[in-house]
Length: 121
Image (cartoon, rainbow, N blue to C red; front, side):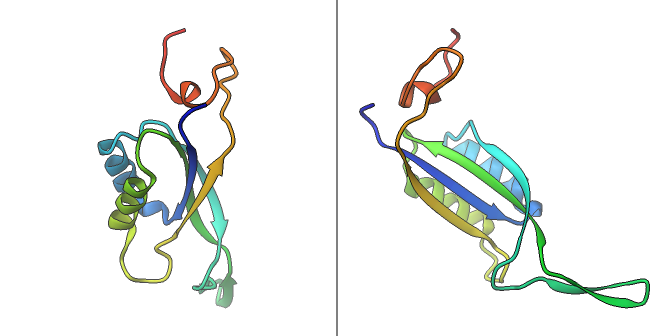
């Protein structure tokens, strides 16, 4: 494993996902894992009215995009996400960056960078 592997988690509003996915594709990001999640941060939710009563909604709908990169620079992914997601308001999201020790493709045992590349086995 000669190249560094990095995992980038992006948590943001579901309404921004298609724009983000399109821009990530333009910089060479082909693979990602996407999950619908609930969360709260600085905005701490909001109030809604349901059947005449005020209800606190503490956990908001978010989307979590998980990407592992080795060829595309981490800074390029981060700058692309910031450009697409930034509105200047609470709720724009968060980006988390982690070092990855290894990746193993289960189907053929490939490891590291080779496990992230598309190869017809």
